[in-house]
Image (cartoon, rainbow, N blue to C red):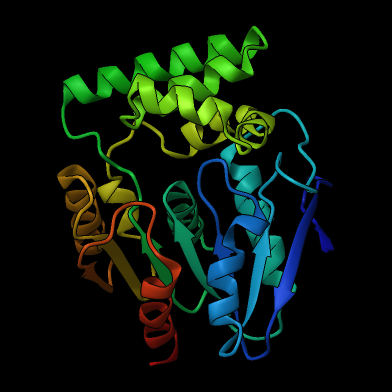
Length: 259
């Protein structure tokens, strides 16, 4: 892997595959750069695909204290490495991060997003999000990383039986290893609602994609984001859920980024 130094001195590890116009993939909760390998492999024949470990994950550093602004600087440092316009794809909380980067002026040619999880729509949702944030902070402060992972899994609707199976799976230690970054993603999501006014400053063309079998709240969020940016469009992938199949998503991204 290669490294770029972010503005605050934090090393950010990245990997490049393929040749062509640069395309940065921004992962979501629990992901590292390697999580995007299947999608990157499908896109590499058409683009110079850059996957990276967000700060606090994999081979990247994690300079304290954390701030969303530092993650924006990480993405800006990757973009600055290129000498031509860079496109960006963000997944889930990574989509929210990429949106904020675009709104903050990080230069990018086009931006594609898959299901940014802005699912807070009323005061009840907002209160639930605040309770989650407080509980997550308490667990991480106490060093209970497994508890933090369980809390997040419960938040996204995983039932106890499935959670018990996940705890025994080979992936569990990997989830626990990056449990502290749940607080990073929680900060990226703000109060959990679509930041409609903020998105009005997003300049690049934006494609927002959702899965036809995803929860209705997730799909509504995707449509709202597409309507809130200046040059947005929306597309639904029939039968897909939040864990979208790379082979279904890749042709859609290829078409958008090359048109």
